[in-house]
Length: 251
Length: 268
Image (cartoon, rainbow over all chains, first blue to last red; front, side, top):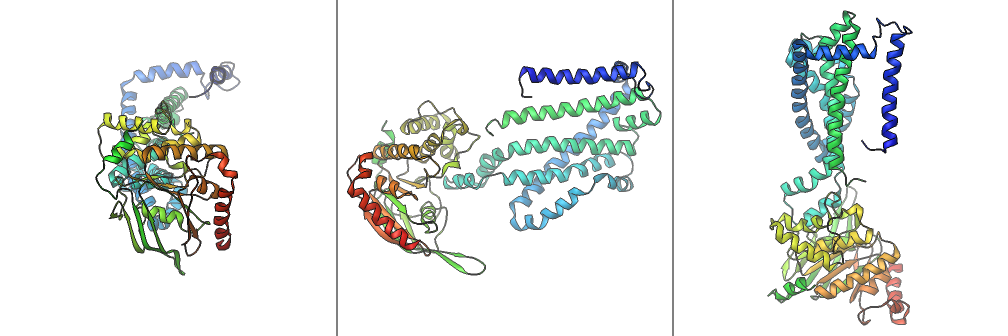
């Protein structure tokens, strides 16, 4: 996170103000506390839930699904993206089609995933993969296109082999765009897996959140929201941190 | 700082650094027609000479340079450097200095200079020592740890020259290396290049749009015409060295530049 001390203080002030407003609205009854439990109650419930074995197991299930889908979608999508970008003809043919596919909301395919895979691990990973792969393909294509012809010519003029060109020119040129792609892919991936869990699942944090919602357990529901939001933000900031360290030369 | 120059002199081949271009042609095939970019180009460059290629846009001067570098194949004729044909890039015989954006922005200046050596697996310590020597030669001692975005345009081109020299090839090919620089920096870099050239004894082939730059730098100026690219004149620049700023306003300088300009105006 860049920014001067003053900017950071302003950010913290905004977060505190939102939390305070939340607390006040609920405590004073301006908003029905049954619909909006207070911030303090929500965070107390969050601490409570994190102690529970069942919740811990749900988090583990979701984490496993998310990481599996991610580990499959990223290399697979990157490979396709690379091939598309490197082959002129293939790129001409496939690129508009990929854009079409990308524009379709992925959620409408969820019922089909349930029919094909049944309810369980495969369905959720499959849907996470499906939600992620298009953005990975498209970002990789952009990353390959960010490699400068001049740099490739330099490498060639000094006798670089294909492997050397790949590791010494392509990879460093692409790294900043790839890291950004990784970050955005994770957002899509997390959304896909949690949506699949909320729609039809026996376990996972998404399933828990859906259940709490159906049972009108607002404190638990909000605590679940905070939990997932915190996990997503942590991952995002982690990659962003790596990103700024790897792309300091980009000005 | 003379180690690079000494190594060149130790090379046994008497023809090291000689360039011979014989009846070279280049035809680009497009869907509708064949475009003749170069037609029957022949020239000879003796070792250690500073030769400048000038001509209007599209005369194929950069194409010719790329063919000397082995980065592009001619469709007719032969090009030999140091007595052997050039069929593919050969960093032992030819170093290339490109236009401004050719440094790798993710590498420091010294890592950029070491790049050609790293490709051939030269040990780190030796690489570093050679890069230091090359950076010192181009006047960038102490700037090795900077990234390209922390260097001025002129300094970046010094790094490019150092990268071209680091393997100590007898020939240095330069493709409009100062085109993106402002006028003052350009003049300074011209003087710097002449100093480096005098210190190393390389054969230099230099492509430019600027007639003043051409006459100021060259032993010989080769003038090309556009479509098809042909050699229309080959001038010997007899001005004494070192060249000075005062020569620019002299009669000898002016008449050489006028002669080139008349050729270019005719073909443009």
